[in-house]
Image 1: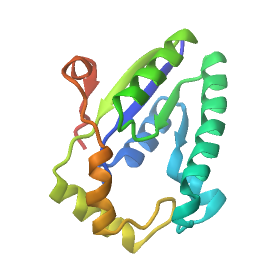
Image 2: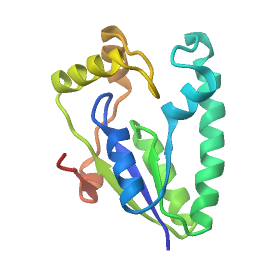
Image 3: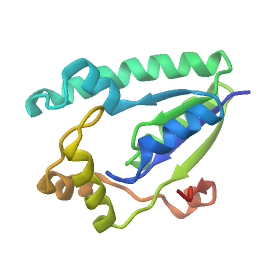
Image 4: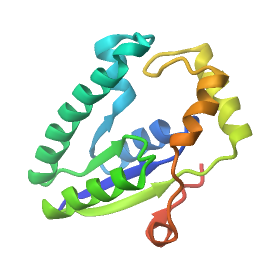
Amino acid sequence: MATVHLIHGYLGAGKTTFAKQLEASLPAMRFTHDHWITTLYGIDPPAEGMPLMHERVSSLIEETWTKCVSFGIETVLDLNFWSLDQRIATRQKAEALGASVLLYNLPLTDKEAWARVEERNKKLKDSFFISENTFKILKDRFEPLTSDELLTAISPTN
C-alpha cells in the first residue's frame, strides 16, 4: 500500500527542502506546485493570470499523483495544504485509493519564515519572488492544523 505524504507549512518553512529529502529517502514521487508553475510560466508570471495557472497546474498534479498512488507509488505532496478543506479532500482522495496518509507540519515563526523568504528571493529558481507585503497578505489564507490533525502530524527537526 502506498503512503501519501502531505506537507503543511507557511512560506519559508522549508516544505520543498523537506519534500526533496523525503523523495530521496523513501523513494517517492514528489509534486511541488511552485516547481510546476515556474517551469511552465516562469518565476514572475502575471498576477492576473495566476488563478487560471494555479487551477491548471493543480488539475495536472492531481491527475498524476492519484495515478501514482493507484500504482502503489509513495507520493510526496508539497502543495502547501494551507486550508483545512484542502487537507480533508486530499486525505479522502488518497484513502479512497487505498493509501495511508501522513501529514507533516513544519512550524516556524513569522520572523524566521520571512528571513528565509528574503534569502530565497536572492536566488530564485523553482519559486516565486515574494514581497513582504505579499507575505503578510497571504498569511490570512493560512489555516494552522486543527487539534485533531495534530494527533497525526509530525514536525521534522531540521
